[in-house]
Length: 425
Ligand code: C2E
Ligand code: SIN
Ligand code: SIN
Ligand code: SIN
Ligand code: FE
Ligand code: FE
Image (tube, rainbow, N blue to C red):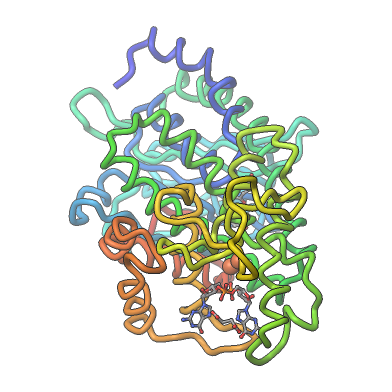
């Protein structure tokens, strides 16, 4: 539990901390973790406004988390609620007002809004005190809703949120909203880039890149933990890796639809053209303005290299498309690929994530594969296509991989769904 001095110190540097985070998902995670710390709350959720609805975006729940086997993460349903005065989150968004409810099961029936018991029923969790705070943009538009659930006292007994909690959280939400607005702009820009690539149906494209990014983070975290990389460094890297992985194939923008959308096997020549997407992608970020551009360039360039050196494009300078001096091919043959640890770690990670997702998804040229068949390809690729250590990590994280697949399948909208904590598994 934070003491008063720690709270004040944390609040003072919160803006700096949050504004360092560029990726939206990573930001939501940090915002909720910090918000819960301030008021010592057991659980919480964030909803993001999507037109006239609130989309359930992210959730944490310590009690439900503890019931899971070690290492597993909560899986929660994707749903949305209308912005109206019927649900608690909807009411806070519609009115722009904070709601402090001491016990949701004793909510006066004179209130317009109601608490939905559905999620408690599904998860076996008991929501009591609930603080709901709108996240308002600089123009006072509602960006989303922050819900903090079950404040606890020193003895871990559930207590109501105090007036001090309300004040702290109002201040907190102002800082969080600034960071959120900025991360949403970055994300919108990235999604625009992905759509421009018009690889496929824009929807499927969005889900694919989200899954590849999600798988990549999972593998990176385990890899980094084995190396005792500090949590601070891991957090920083997760941020740029997530965005960079989303953009791994953005260089396909430079490939003609005839090749990109061909509903059949590519010819030798077509495949040679297709391989250029790695170089096109790297070139898009060649300014290297920030850590993010650097990560995105590395990933675009290296995600089709293979551990045994048989991948592409090899040691090329993306700006010229020419081999890097000292790495020219001998004779007429193609440029040799990078080998083993010559391939940057982000490239090795995204290679696995990308192939696994390509195998398990529909493509213009293939049907989705059964999980067992996709896993077989990944495990057989250890030491030839893929870094064997990363394959081992990937295969040890299948529960997470499936959770990411569930989360980034088609979005489900349940009309009339209301507030609630995470619906457990
Ligand atoms: P992608 O569809 O995102 O696939 C990424 C990588 O997943 C592929 O890299 C490959 O390593 C693996 N992969 C995808 N489908 C299969 C499969 O059916 N079997 C196996 N064993 N591996 C698979 P690759 O081969 O370098 O291809 C890069 C991109 O080129 C693909 O991205 C896709 O956009 C395009 N492409 C590759 N082959 C074909 C094809 O036969 N037809 C068409 N239309 N496009 C293709
Ligand atoms: C971002 O959030 O800044 C873009 C990457 C993403 O959508 O996660
Ligand atoms: C997510 O589920 O990561 C959010 C995807 C989105 O930007 O809508
Ligand atoms: C192709 O040659 O059509 C691409 C398939 C592959 O070699 O992975
Ligand atoms: Fe690719
Ligand atoms: Fe891909």
